[in-house]
Length: 114
Length: 114
Image (cartoon, rainbow over all chains, first blue to last red; front, top):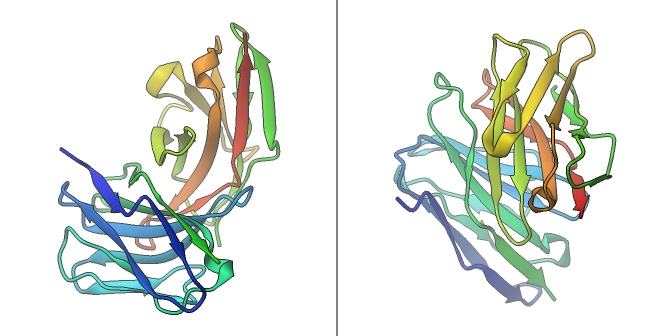
């Protein structure tokens, strides 16, 4: 049981480049989330999804896009990378909100934009 | 809007001594509160949660947390600290009426010295 898997673990992008951060979970969780973690700033919600085909913006969505074509996968897309997007990105999932539990997090993607 | 505050950036304790990591919260309805731990270069791991019931909740690795409604606090505690408890700790509040989105505090670095 792998839980939440994120790839890649590390990436360096040049300004203006694009990339997709992959996230997949094998727990049949409906709810999935993307957070970014900046030093001393906690985690900020970028996008979230309550099920396949349904996504919505979080607190800091600008510069990002997501899709949710299957229950398992929730990729995060950066279209035009900017230095402000240098951060560590975490994907998380949870079961339905009527079963109140904690999140299961992936191990993160450390992104540097130069 | 919900919010979480962790008033201490850093907590230092000696091994074998009790530890407390503080958290206060603000929510409009019933609070759903969580503690997570993050080890270096890893994702966050769920420690414990308060949903309802007993104000003292027990979690993983010997940690417990005390919910205090009148003080809107949810402090993390452990009777006897271990060097291996050294990590970054996050308090979070979850909005179960809004897609289960979580708001995280900025984190507290716990250092346990031998």
